Image: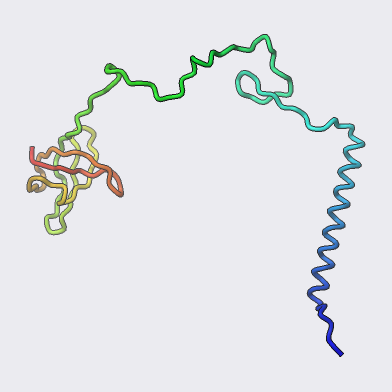
Length: 152
């Protein structure tokens, strides 16, 4: 005599699935009955007023503003010569720390007192601590780095 393929675990899973289906059907019927009793007309509308806020009343058509399609610009505005601000890329500063054996150091900018990392690969001249230098900034992995460093 062959053993049944139905195990206890399979029977329990089937019971849970049927119970879940029945609960879902009951909830759907309850929602339908609730909708009939509350006399709702369906989905209510939301309107956007002139300030961009949601309201339940439609906007006043007399306040509608006509916009000419040609007046809408979809681009970056051109910069005028008067708008350009020339920033000198070469900065001045003082070497606050430099370790020649490890090949790195820090330079303090004379304008904003910011400390910038510098590496021996970014040097043009040999530098030492307390030297006055000129340098340029470049984005590094951990922030701005001083490059093209030379004595001033």
